[in-house]
Length: 365
Image (spheres, rainbow, N blue to C red):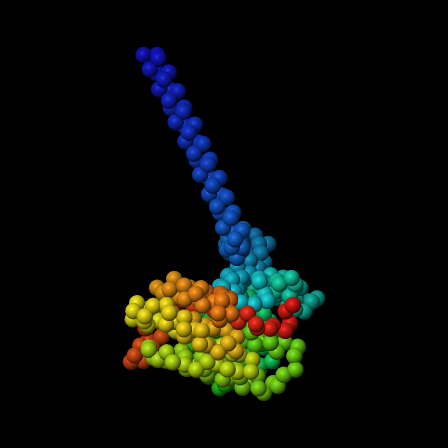
């Protein structure tokens, strides 16, 4: 009887020991995983700090500025990370909020080592803080080079739409603050209001950032510190917007569209989407079509159903050496396009952006 009791106690201790070791291992792995996640996604960590600081403000108002700072940084840096996946060559990698004393200093914004320093006066209204920081970021960092050369109404309309796009996912009170403080006045300008509506249609088709903003980014790089005709740039941007709006509103199967051949923007859009061609004619048909594209085009945008992603990549791999283009970026996205009757319907598309290897960017060495 004593031997049985002793064996049972030893067995329990062994089980408890293994249980504690397992819990320690799981906890360690979980903490390391969490650390790796936040290291890879610093904007998520900023949001976590903001959440902790927000609860701490109920204990002491000393945490108020910490909460506001990291709440702003987390929101804007998350947006910037999303846009950076769609648009290449953005100069700003992240933003940092710095507070200034309203009595002694004027707020200013500047770039340091790829980081945008936004210096703000603190408002007791957090919605106003968010709107002010958003406007400072968008107006200073978004398409910074291109906006130095395009028309004022084009510049302001882009700022307006980009800021709206950023804030529309926030609380309704924040968006309302933006509308009342900024958007309402700007929309009284007919040119700005008209462009805003066009951007909305282009964005619905999923090409506002990866094509319109991308091309304007390329334009800004080309004209930066170079001799240029301002009126030609104004007109080219106008024609670019019209071109993409026509593309966004085209009906299904209306895939024939001319290349855009401006002085600063030269690109082609090709659709790889007709399933009977993919299934019955195979890769060779698309390879021949891509090889026929004018080599003077600086960018090729290949668009197709996300289900054809592997097919599209294979087509590119088999013609890349001949055409002389390199993949700049690729991504899947949701879009709303027109059916054969002109009605809206949702699709999941895949986009490959190919950049001509011979393109010269004047200000980059």
